[in-house]
Length: 116
Image (cartoon, rainbow, N blue to C red; front, top):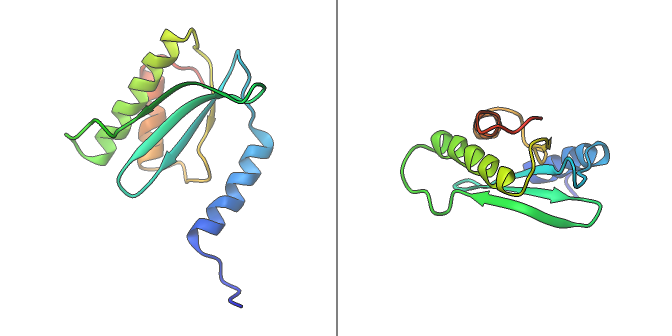
């Protein structure tokens, strides 16, 4: 059996550590982020009831670089959150490093009016 861990296994270990500390409530839901090689997805989650309050992804956005699309998704989730009556969130980067598309998404959400 190999002692080396894959990137996915390492990310899941980091994700478990983050989720042990970060939890969303109805007043301050968790902004969960997932990125694949080509797409980025976000959800606002109330962990007390286990419900998704709002979501956004870049599936329908075709133009722009991945960084531009991530920033646009950040602004979109901020608009969806305001429509749901949410202004403050807890950011959950999902085990990904806070750089690149994750950072652009967070900046877009802040520009859209969300408070972390």
